[in-house]
Amino acid sequence: MSLRPFFIASSLILSPLAAIGFGSAAFANTLTGDIPIRIIVPTTANISVTATANAGNLQNAIQLTQAGLQATKIADLLFEGNANVNLTVTSLENGNLKNNANQNLTIPYKLAVISDNGSINNDSNLFVTLDNITEFLASGQRNRDLYIQINNTGNIPAGSYFDTLTLTVTAR
Image (cartoon, rainbow, N blue to C red):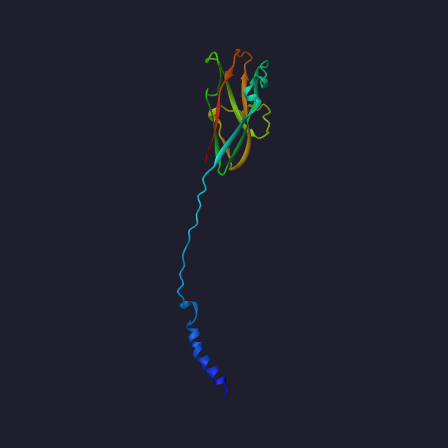
């Protein structure tokens, strides 16, 4: 006896079952689920300030015997962060060097923040009063130089003058 008729009959019976999905994934109990993935990265914004030798000894950098606008670098600045930042500068003496012995004697000054190792070329347009510093820095690591400019009138009274600057970075 040949098995051929048996296989033909079997295939005729099983073919319709396969066509309607018997044994397919349609009859399987399939469930899906979502997994939300999220991270919150906090903003970081830091500043590192390194005063130059001229900051504490302006008389070494400013030609006291010459009248007129004079400038010198007073600090190296390093900004680091993962966000854009604004720089603000405040002064203990409101943008004036004050005489230790006589608080009424002041030397007003202006500041400039320029690219690291940049040149000021005595460009007075670079210098602004403290309330006008609007330095904006993109995220990452940025080096800048801080310069001071003094208008030497040629008759600054003798004495020791001082001020303290505070530099603050704020993430935008």
